Length: 325
Image (cartoon, rainbow, N blue to C red):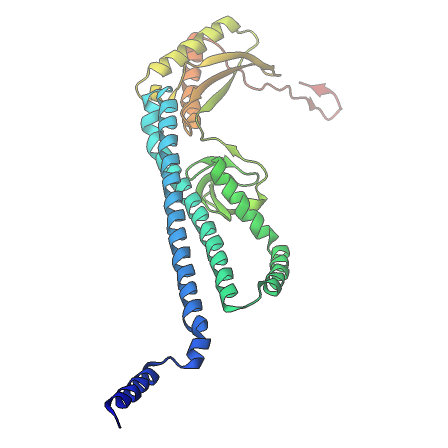
């Protein structure tokens, strides 16, 4: 056999040895193209998720910084005492709100990105999305009807945090539950009442909120004096008592302004009621009211102004039916 023929035979043998089988060529897209596209989809989803989380974190940090500056300016207008007393708690509260809201937004973004990536992967595999989405819609509708109260709780909890209706440490009135907030979650709010009981309230059931801890509070003192007392003298005694308390080193920092007299509140059976009020630091209105009540009592006694007490006339009957007082 000539040398040229031998070379031709060897080239054909090598070509057959390295040739790709026909079934591999026919399924090359299935073996290489689809897995490669799925890997790219997964990598793309991970990158988008990382960018979304980073963007959410930066937005929350910016909100924290802006709120801190605004609250710092508003507190400084009320005086350094309020800033020192409430600044740390306010910063902790803003951080908690931002962390919770950021976690919710991050979870929502993760769910949306994961669902989109899963739909794209199923499309690459060849699974029809129409019947699957229809089935998922029916199941989601059934779950929605069964868990609508749970969804309402979560939405209400998110709105409570976004609107900053109350936070940990606030004294609130949520209807039957009145006390100090110990925990604020997306589903439940925990309130400790004055007797030490811990209330667990679903956020979806909270219809109205009274917060006694935000910005400032007011101490209200109703002073009852005898009808014979001179009201101008009473007003003068109350004003001097309020100014003395504002100048006191122990209690002066709790008062945000000079106490003021609103005038006659009512004419009761036993005396004239005069209303005496003062704006205070949040959560200190009760301590200020107690101290103010003590000082007012001492000042009225020193001025000779009678604090009336209930008087009653008792009638007694003898055995013969005659009445005697």
